[in-house]
Structure formats: structure tokens, C-alpha cells
Length: 352
Image 1 (cartoon, rainbow, N blue to C red):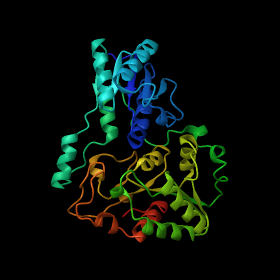
Image 2 (spheres, one colour):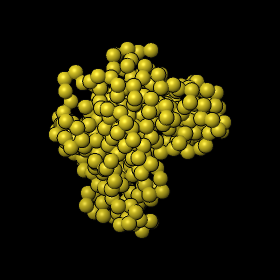
Image 3 (cartoon, rainbow, N blue to C red):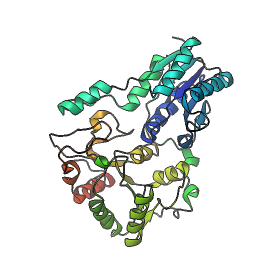
């Protein structure tokens, strides 16, 4: 199969899903230097694509105003086609907008490859609660889209930032450079849904323990008014703790800081995936959702994933459904000391 010359790649949201696409798309760009790629995403996530390969153009589109609705989607497609003349489309999202664009491509005899999301398999996993083997990861599903277009893939993991992208100068207004012997630990205690959030009173105990350790700095990641207020309280209460929720720092700055961390503690959330593309090992905490669904980050290590072996898990693909038991036992069964032990095992190179 002759590979295409120019490929339109579409993934609009959400943050975690876009972040999972970054190392895959960069790898495909590296493996196909003779092909040009045009990555289409929403305006807020365009800046996530730091240090892009030379054959990748990132387009951030204002889908709320400038290109809203059916008419806006058609207008955006026509503008992109007339500018780039792509001969293939990789649909990494499979939502109404990308389906419309795929239809417009087929009307022009442009080849289209679309992601298989595995909705039935994921729903069955929630229904049966039987985790015999993990489903394909989102990264593998993305790679399959490119492979069906005749494009090679490059599955190397690690930081996508490059030497300039992880420079301490980028986060100089957040922290001074890391000193020899220091350990920097990030904590991102929030997620889009409450069933994916570890109890904050218990997470505060983790923050307190790490803060008490000599030579350890803790960086708190989050956003939103409620999150900002809580993280600010923790930062003022414990020495060596810095909250990044005070204002918007931007992806480039936060990714550079994440690259300097020895470890990130995160929920099943966007920050888990951001740390992964920064090349930082992650201690992940899972509640209603499950790693077997395939939403694991690049470099995922099950030894550093905390989850309760309850018969009611997983109860949700994305975590949007309320807890059927009403007690969030899946999260409450995990103690702060388990989290701390897992952090220590990761930092000291031990495995369970």
C-alpha cells in the first residue's frame, strides 16, 4: 500500500485522550518522514503539542464560536482542504464532527481510517466485572488507525519534550531548579468525575507525610475554584509544598516541571497522561474505572497502580455514573500508607 502524502489527523478532546494521542502521532511522524501530518484539535489543547516533529502541523480550531455547528464544521473542513490538500484522514475521535469530515473526505475520494473505540467490549466489562485480559489501549487503537492507512508506527515511549521542552528555565516562576539529592513529587488529586477522586482528607495525609521528609518538594496540580482553594490550604499548611492551581501556567510550563519530577501521583485523569508524555513515572489511583478498559498512559506499570479488588469494579467506563453502593468503597479501601509505600517502591526501584 502506497502511504499517503498528507494526512489530516483529528482528535478534539478530552484532555487525557488528546494527551494519549501525542506520543502516538509523534511516533508516526518519525516513522514516516516523507509524509506531512496536519493535526486538528480544539484551540485549548493545541498548546499541548509541544516540540512537534518537523512534518507535523498543529491546527487549533475554535469549535465554540468560529467553527460551531454543522456549518462551522463544513467551513473548517473546506478551509483545511484548500490549504493542505490532504489525501487521507485519520479519525482518532469518531464523534459527529469527525464523521461529517470523514463523509466530506469520501465525497472527494480521500481515504479515511476511523478508530474502533471498543464500546461494546467496555460496556461488557462493566456489566460482567470480569477482567480476564485488558482491552487494547487507546494508544494501540490510535496506532491501528494509522496502520490501516499504510503508515508505519513507532512505539517508543518516554518524554516527547526534547531538551528545550524540559528546561528549568520554563518553570522558573514556579520553582527554582532542582537541587542535587532533592526529590520532587507531584500530586494531582482531582479528576473529571467524583468516582475517580481519592478522598481529599486522606490525600492530605499523603501530602503531610511527604512534606515532612527532608529534601522533598511536593507540587500540587489542579484547577477550578474549589480545587484551587483546597490546594492553596495544603500549600500554606505544609512546608515544601507548592500549588500550581493559583493560576494558569500553560501546558509547556507544567510539562517542563513534570519532566523534573521523580514521581507523579494521579487519579485516572488528564494529569496522569500529561505526566506520562513528560516521561515521568506515575503512581495511579483507580476507583470506579479500571486500567483494563485501556485508558492507561504510555509506560503504564501495574505495580504502581492502586486499586481495590472489589466485585463491583469496574462500574463505569468513564466514571460518570454514581457509586451503586453509595460508599465509594473502591477508594476508601486504599489507605494513605499504601500510596506512600507505592511511591517509595517506585522511587527506590522496587516492585511488589
